[in-house]
Amino acid sequence: MSTSQNQMHLAAFVTAGPGRPGGWRYPGSERNWLSASYYQHIGRVLEQGRFDLMFFADILSVPDRLGNSMDSQLRYGSLGSLRLDPTPILASVAAVTRHLGVAATVSTSYLEPFPVARSFATTDHLSDGRAAWNVVTSFQDSEARNFGNDRHIDRDKRYERADEFLEVACKLWDSWDDDALVVDPAAPLFADPERVHRIDHEGEWFSVRGPLNVSRPPQGYPVIIQAGASPKGRDFAARWSDVIFCSHASLESAREFYQDIKGRAVRHGRRAEDVKILPMANPVIGPTTEAARETERQLADLVPPLAGLSTLAYHLDIDLSGLPLDEPLPDVDVPGVQGHYKEVVEMTRRDGLTLRELGKRYGGRTEGAFVGTAAEVADGMERWYTEGACDGFTVGAVHTPGAFEDFVRQVVPELQRRGVLRTEYEGETLRDNLGLERPASGTWRNRRYGA
Ligand SMILES: Cc1cc2nc3c(=O)[nH]c(=O)nc-3n(C[C@H](O)[C@H](O)[C@H](O)COP(=O)(O)O)c2cc1C
Picture (cartoon, rainbow, N blue to C red):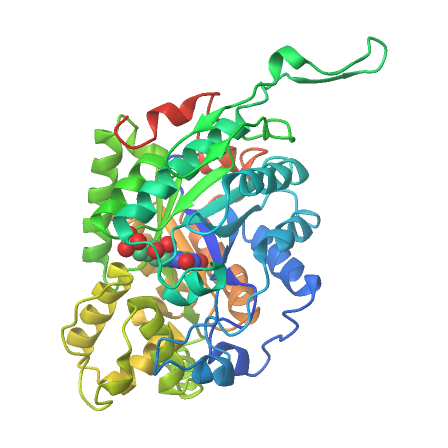
């Protein structure tokens, strides 16, 4: 394993569907979300740009938190309007790339550890060690209703379940020793029974005998990604994650988060560099600063305010439909995603936004930090990176695939010239490229709550 300590890591934020209500309407955007070739093309572009991984967000319902209606999500092609299951897409992207990591979001609140561990072990094998799992705990009653419950589990309980879920998944990945699969036709010895173990897990949430019916993944454990923002979520992320996603409206809040998470990881006996923190960046690039601003305006014009507000209502888990559109978002108690609330409060105050403007901005997700020429975007990213706000970025495309193509063609060479981005992949597996150790069997013991 070799990786440069002073080079940033890049993940790409992708949805298996339109995702952004302005992006899919933007001229030149591709709209074949139902075809593998759409995702394979993006994967190839990202690999040319030496991205570490392509990450698929996911949710398990069509959001209806705004006025108890799915209307604006469906009508405007917002965040949760159409979402393919990302897991099979990973294999199709891995088949046309060699180095790019492939990550899917899977919730620990509704599924069971056995099929999830099996699915990621399979993807890790099929991709020769490039699989990653974005572990989410979900936050919406609308998701619970698709799994036989009226209400979602409360935050403390869902992180307890997530802890046990990850413990069981890791035990299952460890249930085959690394050398258990022998495949000696002469002996004959296919798999050594001495080296494949039942796990006999009996816990509060799960009872799983094991072993897994897939041999230990090439990476030991697939790369674990998390995006917890509440104190409980941050603590969980600091213990289990290899990569952390977050979104921040300013370098200062990103830096505060970065220091907090690294401190928590160290308190849990890990090294600060064992956890890579990659905040969102949504670059809008133009030949001149003014041209980039014009593209940003054009994209915002394509977003009806309700398209963004229905997504914000979903994220905050608050019905915003009764609030006046021409006044700012008032102070509210947020049962949903604290990190997104903090971000929109900061944007609202800084830019004096009304709720209507916030809806457009939130739907477009084109907040200003990275708008300009390729050199200006690279300046901004380099500044966040060198000033201790991140280990790299989760890059979103404001329209697809054009914004990824522009980024790779224009910003990537700028970053490479400055020496802050790799020009070649360093290793074979995603862990190698992220500069992460391959976990030995039993590593989960140091990660679970109270370890
Ligand atoms: C960049 C980013 C991507 C995320 N992607 C997803 C996702 O795809 N699916 C999901 O259910 N939650 C997603 N989340 C939400 C987090 O998993 C988490 O629920 C949220 O940050 C709230 O944290 P908390 O549970 O600690 O309050 C994402 C968050 C961020 C910042």
